[in-house]
Length: 355
Image 1 (cartoon, helix red, strand yellow):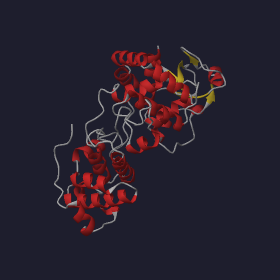
Image 2 (image 1 turned 45 degrees about the horizontal axis):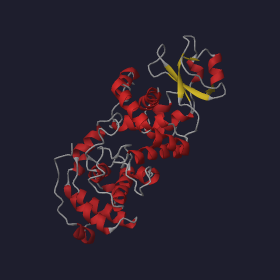
Image 3 (image 1 turned 135 degrees about the vertical axis):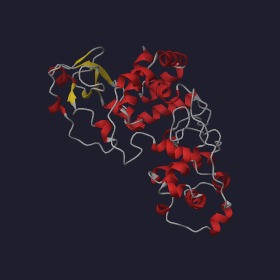
């Protein structure tokens, strides 16, 4: 899957560092026409190399990586093809959740998850005791991200992140992630090991480099943090991510509910605007206690929650279909990937894996 189309770097790193014109980063790579200019990309990479060294990356790592980097147009095209990737395009209608659920919470993924859940119970139980994050949630994230390690991506991580930074639409984000990928290499983890998605996610839990540096943990006690090959490290790191994001022990993510036709949804609209992915959070109602939801006729169809639990209502397929009351822990799943379809799939797979 690695992109074959490359542009040759024409300036050796040492020469670029000493003689290349230093341009403001805001003037480099702001559009596709500029992105096709390999000399502009080379000059930009030279600047990022200097910044990496200023942030503590060794010159040895910078010298080993920067001269090999070439712009990857395919990565930029993939980024622009994502929903919302083109700012000029109108917002598309939200599709139904049911087909997504059928694909991501399917029998095969449930069966593999149950097998992993049973074979790793000792490790999972220990991590849950230490963190309060349920065993099945760790397994479900792993299953949703890489189908339990079946696919982790084969894009060269520094090249992908450098190309996305140079494209310029989210430059600050991808510059940081690029430099952090060099910091990972600086720790002795090979560039080939950290291959990942075109968007810069890597390893069994698909962390961005910055997240690896912040939350990755040694789960098997061997003194190394290897989220690419060690299931124990990957699962412990997922749990630590959830702890840092505010997971509350002993609180379910939510419950499936039936909603009466008579429910007045207009009075339940959430008036608070989320600073992060507002379109995702706008689909949730305002918070009410489970007891208050019961008084409105919204009733769980399976397990229940204490009446004092605060929850919001989400109807992913609209009125008349299965709906969900969601606790604050559901918002923690959203922190991992801010998509209601993703978060619901993680939650439902977790329930199915646990059985």
